[in-house]
Image (cartoon, rainbow, N blue to C red; front, side, top):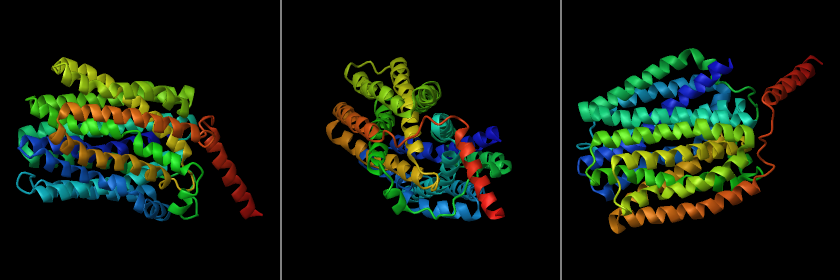
Length: 420
């Protein structure tokens, strides 16, 4: 069952990465390739709104999962996304920009909802030092999904156009759905609380403001640079194939960093110490694009090496941050707390996506890269402060099997009380 559960979690996070890859990387590249101005490309930041706003329906989704089953609802949301991909094939963005934008927005709304059910499973089963494993699995699966939905869709688009890319995505999703079908029971949390999930209970939880601050700020600078990378490559006359290949290697480096740095750091140091250790090199490497731009060494070899190292370290940092926030989240609201905090990161992605390209069109790429790097340095101070304030509220010293034993003891007590 542990392997089957990890497989189910990985498949769902992977499926959620597919539309995110399309929205985060490929859509802006396709638009720029077709001659869309940078200021209009900023509208693509809207497709991240579902990930930023899912907190408003996370409680309802959590309660629906308690009533009808998290696995049952996760499979139905997944299947509806396949239908949306098939329909999107008839609305190429060069002719139906608003329809294509709306369809991608709907696709991300569907998977943002499925993410609530996935989070409930992960928070329930993977806490303590295991939170590093859960978030490494999330990073690897989600980023591999982004490879398929981002770079993979870009390659298909180059060969078969928009319809081929959308229908290819539908095929990927239906294969994942068929793989999840026999694993539905593994998605259910260990213990489903009868108490309704309510946001006001989350707001009263100790350390809420600091947890939100960390979730909102830690990824902003990196997301802004990632959004600007693809238009920058096109304006420097790199080919679509190179842009897709570089995107793929960056994502794979991030996944490797999560597995090879983030997971061991959380496992052996604890989540808060891992964050404190990895935030420094992650912030320093935000200046990679600025360096490549100013010293005129933006050759393919330097791009692969510099950006690969940046994403490798950032992948480990990402895992350590979310392991901390997972351990802070309440088990009574398995799908609500963690999903609410994820909205903070998504909100940062929305702001970054809508502001970075228009800013570059006004002040140029070099100054935009510099401002983003300085912003990352200020964010470092916020994250370090938040980590200190959350001390004692994120239990990452729990032995591997204590969490399961706790719920087993609770279940035995409840059974004894009913018998009595």
